[in-house]
Image (tube, rainbow, N blue to C red; front, side, top):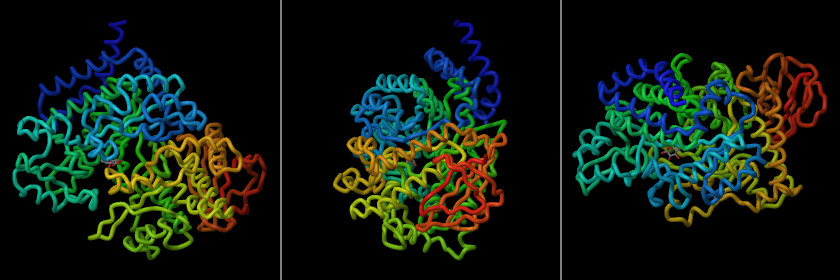
Length: 613
Ligand code: GLC
């Protein structure tokens, strides 16, 4: 057995060794540190459990396992959802009932609550926040998930550590070796030069990219919050140690590693410090390291950038980087479409994504834990006479219920008083008007909002890739305003959509007539259908359709002679799709009825999922 295992490791290493060494030496030119890294890989391979190694072998034989139509994700906060890691374990039956077989556990590693950024300021990469449980609990949860066929995703926050991390504390105490793991400067010269070219991530809540540390007389680079110190990946010690942390977490049974804020991990004076070529070298090395030690583990890159910057993170077919990336521009464009009732830009955006090789797997979503950043294709919008600044202002007004036919209850996020820029927060249901409708008690408004929530999910499920629900959206959870009263959260409006799971509301998903029941059952039906129809898989060819009405989005998916058509009406009136060239007889997947689609009326905020007979 031992021999067989060594053979397996050697074989995988052999496949990647030369390229890995080449890239490492190009970046670090340090043979002994490379040797040390190889030893680390071997140790983590040896420490990996037999059951995880068995999963590795299974998935190596079936490398397309995550590209099928049967994966449905949900992202959730452990404390909000189950209180603790063990509490989440007890709630697995609820996740199964929700058809979820992939959970993204929001950051749960040790952090200081007052300086946490929702857990994205990690104090110890090998310790769970005590209030949530222990590493053993995590292993128990991943094992229980695997038994039920559920994949587990976690964040790997590799751009920075918390200022409370041991390295940061030692650096603050003046230990040179630890200072070299961050960016320290004893005067403002270089920080000022960086500031000339580096944009700001949190212009209101954390202006600037450097923080002054009076106790040690240095500035430290802090791209995000002042307590999140950027790691210096020019130092091979940082890379080696962080790779060890990655493998340590993979060995706890994590299936999908979300590489947080990955575009930012390499800094270079005179640049924007985003998406530099060394970032791709590092991600490529990480991909190979994963394939050597834990080949079943997938890398999900968090690249919240315009499409031209996102796609390179897939790497090439010969030299892949991330397995999956967020479909972020599509998400933002979806909400633009909700506000404008005009699908023109969304069609253009979807066509761009559909034109990419089908190997590329996108993670599709309507809402996540972050704000909506309005990263739209403004060059296109300008052609229709829409300028960036007034259009963003319109969207932000619309989703706060201030303009247009809006019933939304969003809040602004990081309003930049200098540039006039602002982003937006709120849950799907509240942005779709459900909160206001429930408060008003008007049945028609409630119907309309529920229709919009369901239609948006039906459309999201029809994109190519893996759909990921934001916990609570399956029952139409509304905003949580309680964060305003919490000193640690009040300045960060993202907490508006980071509320506690309402289990009483979840119980109402069993009660016909409630909004929870209506949303939950409608989504469950769609999820089941999606799992049954192979043309929803990533292998299908997808295209948008000309529906003859700007309010109606049309999507077609083709696989092995089968054809699915989706029609989605983003407006508040029934609309007729008249120009679908294919025509022909189709079956309505949801109702089972047969219909001819050469001319078809789609209800207000309604949709059709059709299959050609
Ligand atoms: C990512 C996270 C975000 C966090 C940031 C800094 O963008 O999604 O929530 O604030 O990284 O770690």
